[in-house]
Image (tube, rainbow, N blue to C red; front, side):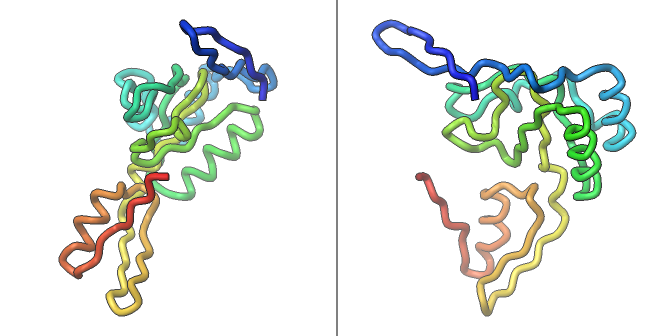
Amino acid sequence: MLLKSLRLGARRLATVVRDPRFATVQDSDFRIFELICGKNHVKTAEIDNYKTDWTKAFGGNPACVLLPASTEEVSAILAHCSKRKIAVVPQAGNTGLVGGSVPLHDEVVLSVKRINKHFEFDETSGILDCDAGFILEELDDKLAPHGYMMPLDLG
């Protein structure tokens, strides 16, 4: 990782310099992403909610946001991005507070929020098996009638 120091007032912050080994997304990549996810699920406009987390302290300008509907589509996207050396930032609910799921530069944001169909809960064992696209609030709402809740880990 390449770091550059940035001075803001009395504080010095480290900023990450874009790694030149990663490719820039081209028109041909957008066409492939549209074949994989469908045209309506490759976003380049109205993507502000994907650029930063709740703190608004971290963020970049992603080339696009991809919204696959299945793990097969995720695999196809990652295979293409790996072959082309396109940087990818995975994102679920984007409810984090430390900038771990937001782009720093022009990466592709891979949002799994459409992958939210499978939900299986065993009330006896308390084991939950579900898709990655559920956010904690949705899971908490689904578990509440059974007397369970999603534990929150804020640190």
